[in-house]
Image (cartoon, rainbow, N blue to C red; front, side, top):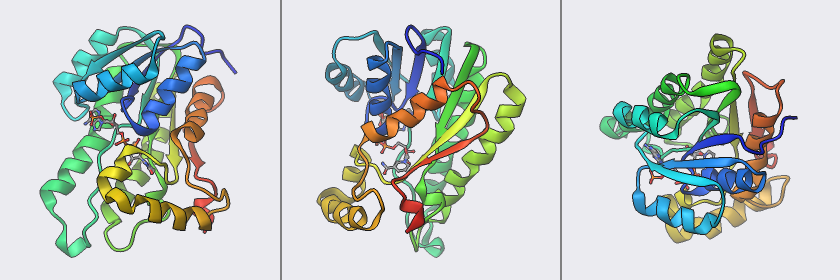
Length: 242
Ligand SMILES: NC(=O)c1ccc[n+]([C@@H]2O[C@H](COP(=O)([O-])OP(=O)(O)OC[C@H]3O[C@@H](n4cnc5c(N)ncnc54)[C@H](OP(=O)(O)O)[C@@H]3O)[C@@H](O)[C@H]2O)c1
């Protein structure tokens, strides 16, 4: 396992949720961290919460190619790209799909990840890696309404396998979390979150819903283990088993 001390890690989605957890854990391991998100306010709040450390924040929308290109220019040479960014997925039954919303979701998450990879290669140091985020919705899609998110999340496994070959020796991997208690849930279900989490937490082998700090070590492991590439790491407390 290589050390992360002094390594520069770009976390797209680092101002909230899983990405914030990765940024905090990487800082604890001596890395230099660049957090990226669209909202300046969220980035500022995250910087305050992360406290002193070797970090910067860059506002950029990963669905906008000019933003993505500028972000990598500003960040400079780096060692690991972590992409956790995402927005609430479409959840209507297929016959009621809002196509603009569905396209926006695919554009942000999947095409956005393609753009990150496209521009990252110019600045990624030798020995580096890219890690993208899929999720339990590909294995346990919500019914009805889970088809679009399952298709997008599932595609990441094959995106990583192809890129791992094309970009070798740069490594490319995926983290696939189960439910994680993040701000995204507040946005999707509001106060009903507690009830959902109690119910699912009682069903899964881990006995509770994950916090971002439970998931972050999977990203650190993939950055540090030089023999992991083209892989999807599931970290879901056994949620796929129930
Ligand atoms: N939480 C879960 O239970 C769970 C489970 C499995 C998979 N996942 C997946 O994990 C990812 C992260 O989820 P989370 O729960 O950590 O969400 P979150 O707390 O809402 O955080 C999302 C982060 O992504 C940023 N972001 C969103 N769209 C962006 C864009 N177009 N360009 C740049 N940054 C963008 C947000 O900042 P701005 O809004 O300021 O841009 C924020 O920093 C999502 O793709 C989600 O589907 C989540």
